[in-house]
Image (cartoon, rainbow, N blue to C red; front, side, top):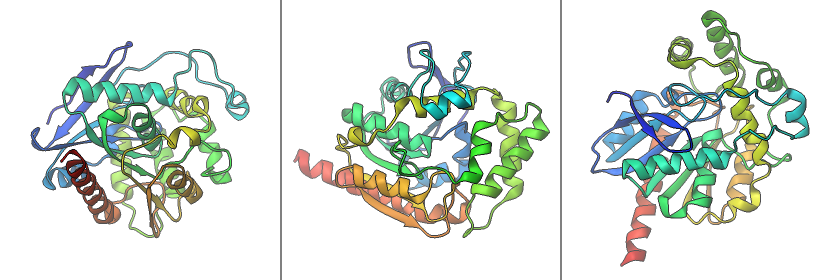
Length: 300
């Protein structure tokens, strides 16, 4: 399907794409920090659609072809002190974007699948708009606690340093990051990583956007108590070798959300290599079906 645009209010327009039959059960895919919707590979989306789901992927605010803001992101010092400027938006604001997308597309309630920061956005959406959520799958995400899920020390230079402004430098930087935080138990497709980075650069490069999105995570603080409000059936998936958000983040997430189930994947890092898709797609589909079954029994 071609890219489409949806005005979700508050000065934000989101770019999105759909896969599958609109009459099927909706799944909203939410991507992570400084990462465009194309990181949900087209084949991944198609495989979910073939399981009987209507799949929607979108660019969060400040990334890709969705609305970009123009304020200066928090400095490294402000982030370390967890003090951000007043214009900084939060994960709840980004969750409200996704909520309004569901409303305006007429597909609520939907199953939510979020990766990394996308998992955090999904968590906020499930906690603050429970009527819009059938189930939540939180992948390689965390709670915002300082004591869980913090990056390995080797990752901080990439988080705090802005990306190169030129296309070739941006591609090389992306390859370096995934070489550092990617899965060790699955084959890494370096050519695909470079191709996707080049495509992302061409779709909408913004050197300051990642800093503003990182500011949203910092501004939202520790969300552990809020996660306790989530009523939607929740599956938490995390890799055993994740250096960006270490496994303790997934474990803390599962502990914070009532009734959540934790699935650890051996050898998975902070990426979604094709080799791990069968496990993840099976888990998402089974979790969604179980949640819908429980929902139908409750209604009866």
